Image (cartoon, rainbow, N blue to C red; front, side, top):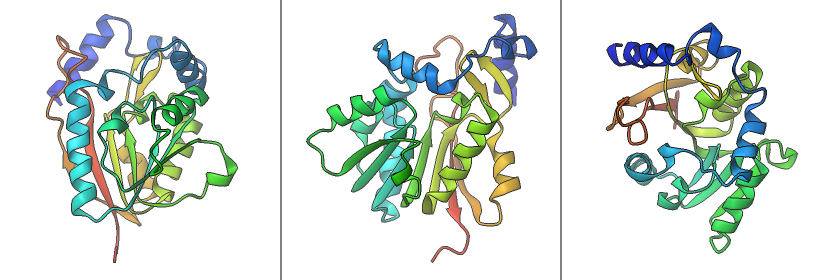
Length: 227
């Protein structure tokens, strides 16, 4: 709680938290990311360096120890994080056509990986052993987009869901809206899913080193009565 208060205090001072910040939001999260990638910007600091290593270490170990064969990721971004992944089969989705093009080019010689736009009808019912969401939820600034995303994240997995995100309500930047997503889970899918484990970030947010620290933690969900 102290860390969250510090983050909010810092962001209030910069005008990036509170009601005034909401007015400064971008109109479309999809448009924001498409334009970001078109301008040759990357997925963000969390997909690089020690934060990327931390995420890869945990997920790769989980995949190996839980006999995961197929992984679906909603929000694959520029593909840099995926270069550290060790998954037998992988399908990545994103709202940005440019991101999908980048990933298809990066992994052109890897037939274990496929990439599609989020709204491709033929892939809407794709299923996997594990679905993952890494630094995505707090970028979903539209409520309807958030609702649809969360429903799909849990619907596309037969066994486990891994979420790496912040978990409190707050407006952090024009393209960042932190959400207490566990409230949504409690209300909508808690009859079918339970929290298997919560893993705190090895590098918790530090305002003096924002590119190498993070507001996100790991939330690992397991389907109830999993056989």
